[in-house]
Amino acid sequence: MVRSWRLATLGRRPGELLQGPGTDPETVETMRGCIERGESFVVDLLNYSHAGEPYWIKLSVVPRRDDAGEVIGFFGLEVDITAQRETQMELEQQRARMELVAFKAARQKRELERLSAERAQAMTRLETEIERSRRLEAELRRQATQDELCGVTNRRGFLERLERELHRADQLGHALGLLTFDLDHFKQVNDTHGHAVGDALLHDVAEACASRIRPDVDLLARVGGEEFVVLVPDTEPKALRALAEALRACIEGVCVTDAPALRPSASIGCALRRRGESGTSLWKRADASLYRAKDGGRNRVVCDGLELAA
Image (cartoon, rainbow, N blue to C red):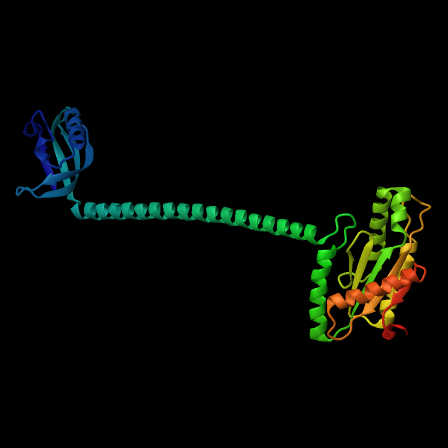
């Protein structure tokens, strides 16, 4: 729709003809200023019908001038853009809703990331605590089952392993051998050279003997002052005697740094378990062989039973 207004028709307050309850005051002021200055303008304006119904128009206005260039009126073009504005408003509302959804989603994502990070930290702390507890438990068990001086298994650890090997031997039908030995004249070593040398001798003997047994199969343990045992699973008479002789020979070769003239020796008793025999009985027979070795002159091996004589 094209309209033409005379300057007089617009009066001294141009733009008032287009105003209504919902008309933007700033837009009206812009129109008024342009008309008063005789300038062109284009605005989107909420207009009203005679019935008072609002509708949107795009209003384009240019001045009419006479030959002298004076403004004598205005040409105006109105285009109904109500549908466009409604579509635009709907799009803006949808955009606003989408932005709200995106904001909520981002906030939820941040919250999930925070919770995930907290969970990861909690799991790390828990795993660290579990590992620390495991190490502490292992260390406590080590201390409970390891001889502090010699670094080998102690009496308690030996008894626990003996019970397991007895059960295993009964289940699988395997043989089980036991060596028991102590150092000859050890009291004289302490009396002559002092307890520090005696402790060093015990440590060095344990270290030497540990190098002669099967790793992760045989078990060397210190069960008394200078008394040691070796638990030998899955063995046979000749192998048990050979191990006993090898240990006796390696003990003879031990040299204590602070007492190089010292020549240690050991008496060794050995026994092979009989079917169904208890650990206590097996140990007693090995001990009895040990005392026979001592009575026979020391620094020798005595084996219990005719089955070891070959």
